Length: 389
Image 1 (cartoon, rainbow, N blue to C red):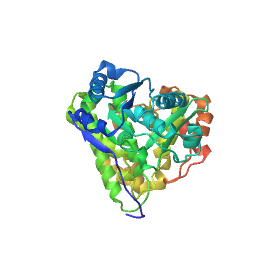
Image 2: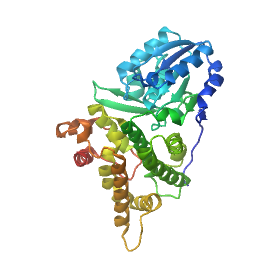
Image 3: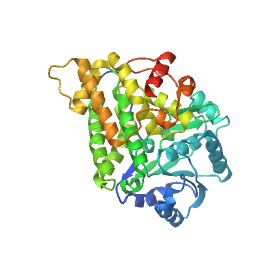
Image 4: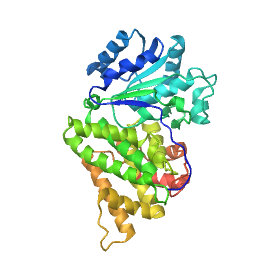
């Protein structure tokens, strides 16, 4: 394991089918005014909203409603949330929902006391907050993003056709606490569940496909990938299987709480390309990732052949007998494709609403990252997008 690094994760997790009761332990640590952040209203239909509100009232909190957070939170919604927090002197941002709600809460947290335009400061210049931030807590209802235990926040600007994620270095941005009840994920439609599953898997891939050293983080990644593959096959056929859903939820957290990125350069190009597709189509995040992954990985495979061979053998149990490294690596990606088809994931961007006329614009909106086996140029991104149609 090469390189030097630090690791700290201050988020306290409560996990299990009775974990919501621990909200009673956390709420007394914060002031009276709680901004209750949620999405389109599904938590009102499944009863989670009532349980949370009952707890907040029992703790004597003033509840400031902030609903309507969309799956890809927009900069306009961010501005709205900032005004709600400022007007009501909010003491705690409580996100009840999936990763989008958690991401949005973190964006509001760093923006309430910011004297500049937060889009320009945080999502264009990628600066850190130099102002007081608000504490964030999460009650998670969808597994996928890992936002419950990291400092990342993704915001979409439709006007500029950009969907940008900022992983803040400031530990204050991480949720102070997160409540993870696997039962809360069981009412999700199948398409949302499998999109979350692929988001988990790709988070691991983005960190795994970098570096050539013998790295403990890679062994952890392989175990997490095998776990999500196994549990996803069960959950897609039996959505109410608690054990499978709990394993998926726990894997999602460890896939992106920075642990498996330690000692790694990481490669986030699938996310960069997928997010650019999302900015043009507003498609579900996990589906934009699945739609571009295979063309991207087949393109960069020759530059990281040893890791792709290892991926095939350790994750997909591909036999090495009488095969070249390239044949083994390609077979691994074929096994990955078969699994994606079994789940019902999107395998091209056409079905997400993208077309040939959008390719140049999507390429222009794609942030180019270092760290992977091949640093792409714009022409290569265009080529990968064409193969993704």
